[in-house]
Image (cartoon, rainbow, N blue to C red; front, side):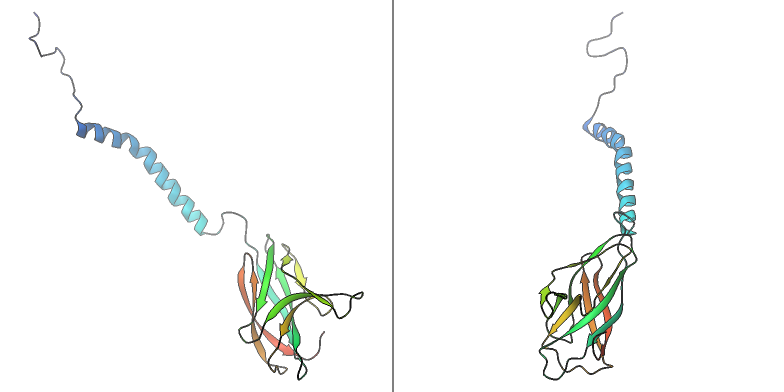
Length: 176
């Protein structure tokens, strides 16, 4: 016996657009879920600060501003910058909201006594220290206001990776 025209011996399943969408969605659910979970975990890991290079750890100690003599057109500030982190950082500039224009400079040394040159950046090595002193690096303060010994002034040191490091700096007499 032959089946009638238009019928088949087995019941066939015919795909409808809705069932095709459902089956596609089901097959994509596992990879899509895994991608979302990975993205959430990577975002959380990045937010902890542990991703990438470890950050430098900058501290500023032994800071001082030299009180200028009356009528002086400039004075200087000196800092000891310590990096206890495992990545280097770079001092880009220094400024104070209470003082005039500041610039990082390097003294000319014995051969060029009295001369200074501007320094555009200062590397602070990982685990290292940069000591500013009158015969080396320092911060030149142009047209300073009257600064009396014992006063403290807010100074900002700006680093490439650490950003702004603010420090209260005492005004002292004479360079040391």
